[in-house]
Length: 255
Image (cartoon, rainbow, N blue to C red):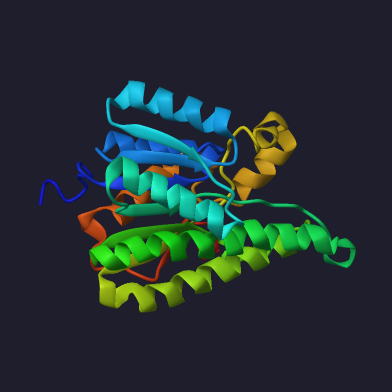
């Protein structure tokens, strides 16, 4: 039982691994023993993350670019992972885009872009790497959702919320499809997480207080707050868990 969270010998692919949330998950997976592939569009960024994490943890880390909206590009990532490490045991879809626009003003091209990255990108990754897991008859898939999957909020989040609701239901349905292959499919749904892209929230005392007051635990979240759930859902500890979204939100969704 002591090794139920141990990921030694496992190969994890983190798509969006150079993002604010992705970096934290890459580091956590590596700290628990996984060989981690860092993937995103930005070659310079993923190389930097991979090198830093490998130096810190001593575990093999590999970087490869990918365009999540392209099945061909995703296939090349899969081929590179299999060539390098032989397989993929864990897939973490940590990519995401939020363009805040009021519905009556939402540019259709921006709406499509959000769905292309957040929903289609998730589907393509799960399709491509899911086939590897199907062949192995084993695997863990973790998608990135949000509290917006089930809780609405004014301020231009309709498009983002729609994509995350789609990811949530896709996760449930894929879990049913992949169950016969012993592949667990789950999601993590954080509240606002402070990253370089959202640092402006805590730099404004008024906004920071407003956001903190919404959270029963009285504080905002950080990437390290997501690591525990990611390790759990990647490890043997979650072998009887599938089709769930874990809301990591300081209690926000129970209000």
